[in-house]
Length: 265
Image (cartoon, rainbow, N blue to C red; front, side, top):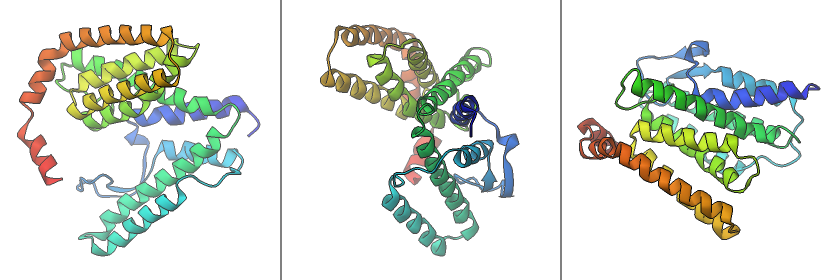
C-alpha cells in the first residue's frame, strides 16, 4: 500500500497478462474439459489474483460503481437463464466468469482513481499488444501459420482484443507529446490485425481508425494530425499492396465451417 512502484508494476503486469497464455497457472476449482463453451469451469487466474491484491491495497472508491443498474440487470437475466439450461452447471460456469469481470471492473475503478496508476492501465494493455505482435511475426514467418493468434485461443479473439486497445493508442498519438510508445502500439496493432486475416477484426480496425482520426480532427485540427493522417494513409496503402492477395483469398475462400458457425449463432 505504501510502495507506489510495486502498485505500478502490478497494474502494468495485470493489464498485459490477458494477451499471454498463462493457462498452466490457472487454479481450476471445477472444470469440464469436454465442454467447449465460453467458460468450461470455475477458474481463478493469475490476473484475478493480481486484481485481488490491488483491490485490497487501494482505498475504496468514493464514487458509485459504474454501470451498476445495467450490470445487475444483466446478471439477473443470466441467473434466471440457469433454470432453463440443459446443463445448469455449464450456465454457472459462465456466470462465474461474469462475476470475475465485475470484480475486475471494481479493481480498475480503484486503480484509475489513484493519482499515478491510471496511465499504467493503458501502458499494460499496450505492452500486451506489442508482445503479441512479436509472436504473430514469429508464427507467420517462422512457423508459417496462415492465420496467427499469438497466445489467444483464436485469431478472431486476438483481433478483437487488439481492436479495443488500438483506438486509445491512436488517440494518444494524435495529441500527445510522447509519441514513441503510442506509435509502437499502433504499429503492433496493425501487424496483429493484418496477420490474423480476421475479416471482422480488419473491418473494426479500419472503422476505429477513421472514427478516432476524424473525431480528433473535429475536436481540434492541427498540421501534426493532418501530417500523421497522410503518413498513415500511405502506410495503409503499402500494407494492403503487400497483403492484398492473402486478404482477398481469405474473403473469397473462407472455410465453410466459418459461415456455418455464424449461421448457427
